[in-house]
Amino acid sequence: MTVAQPAYLQFDPQTRTASINPREPEFVQDPYPAYAFLHGASPAFFWKEYGFWCFAGYDDVNRLLRDRRLGRENRWGPPGIRGENRAHLDAFDRVEAASLLELEPPAHTRLRALVNRAFVSRQVERLRPRITELVHQLVDRVEADRGADLLPALATPVPITVIAEMLGVPVEMGPQLLDWSHRMVEMYMHRATRETEDSANSAALEFGDFIRRHAEERRRNPGDDLLSLLIAAREEGQKLSEDELVSSTILLLNAGHEATVHQTGNAVRSILMQGGDPRRFFGSPETTAATVEECLRFDAPLHMFTRFAYEELELADGVAVKPGEQIGLLLGAANRDPAAFGKPAEFAPGRADQKNVSFGAGIHFCIGAPLARIELQESLRVLFERLPDIKLDGAPIYRDSYHFHGLEALRAHW
Image (cartoon, rainbow, N blue to C red; front, top):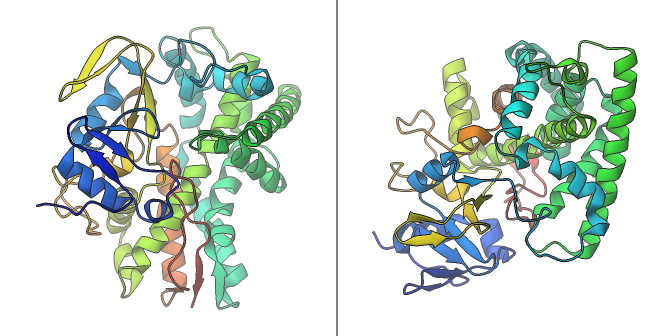
């Protein structure tokens, strides 16, 4: 079936080059028509604005996420490939250099084992009652108001409270943690400005100093929290270095809320746009889990994940890359691939072909996926059971941030 080419998208079939401004408002608000066109025209295409090849097909994305000839670690210089002096990003680069997300084996293997051991030891399923209690408390605060912006009222406080409690950092620090996280995450925007870079660097410096101070206190007085477990964790006699501890904690705090906030908002929007009684999607633990998986597929919170090529490769359909070149894996597009999903534009919980890649795949599969799933399940289930008559106040607007696909606000009434 031929899909219409959006007016904002220019495509050259000879070179398979697509021109899409990632800040084009129509694209930001709904990237799926562009994905649908590209699935038909060329699922592998050169994205002019980013300057690298991108892959939109499910099979390609799933395969390349697992391909060890590609990786996150930049082996050709400091983070970023622009080559200019980065002295003003010293603190940010220091955090990135020791981050689990930016490393490959053998460093990644050792670090992930340490972090995963501490993380899994908490048995995140045991957190479900606390998450359920927290969601009820948040709904209690707004129920009588007959309306609220659900991003600050629900989507944001659930994951930031849970990860702060897990790490043993003061929950009242939540707003400050969010500020640091948001400023650092802005670095992943298309063509970050010098102002963005300076802000991200100062946030990384302040965030790192905070973690170091808190870690020192935990060394003197260990507790039953994730930060204490990270400090104590050992793998074959090895521990986390100070920089690795700071980077791992910042990653868990950032990843522990950023994507979950966006996915919660996107999920509420997706469900309410189906009309009818939203409780029908949450009749049992099985249907609740299936609904969350479909929300993850239908409108993912992260749409692009990049990789570096570590050798000369032919990746797909004659697409060749050289060592040091980046590629983009379009998770949001892969989740809507008509070659992988029946009626991909339809919201269908319980679909037999559910296999979304929203948490990634391979060795960089999201370490917090089990916790994120529980937070989403309980947030959505409790919200719609408590407020079954909830309605959106008009169409929510997405933030001008292509990589991280989430709403500016989620105003609703009941």
